[in-house]
Image (cartoon, rainbow, N blue to C red):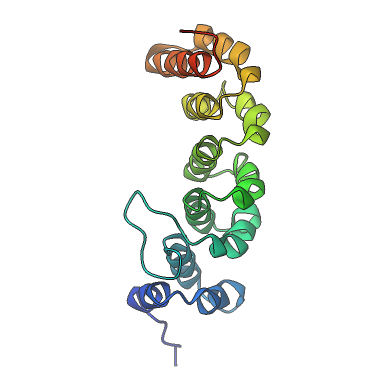
Length: 191
């Protein structure tokens, strides 16, 4: 007889009561289905500090979740799990999420990479400057990397953004030029 699996409501309940350990038990169990691992990761990635759900696109995720989300982003084989992990780490606004987020810059999943890029900008992580510069030529992620560099406000990125602005085309060029102007203003090179 097949084993009954808990539904999404069960994971929402665990998130709402702030039971990180019970949610994490679904991540560590090798017999758990991919669907349950995804649900557990989503619940951790959307848990407000102390329990409950964070608001849709604002609000902070419980920083205690970094312990569970970091390893998932760094090496889980499921791209959906890594994506939820990156999403949750991004919303912790906690510098302890930096290492896994830097790892997420090279993820094969585009959405995971996007969350990692945006996170580094939001964290103003100077450690991310060089890896973000390396992404400026990426057609899909270059404009996001430019935006993150503008938020970090590290003068080292200026010449690379200047070069990217001359080689980008169309709306990507506009986005890179806007990021460059914001960065130059932020570091005092433009008034």
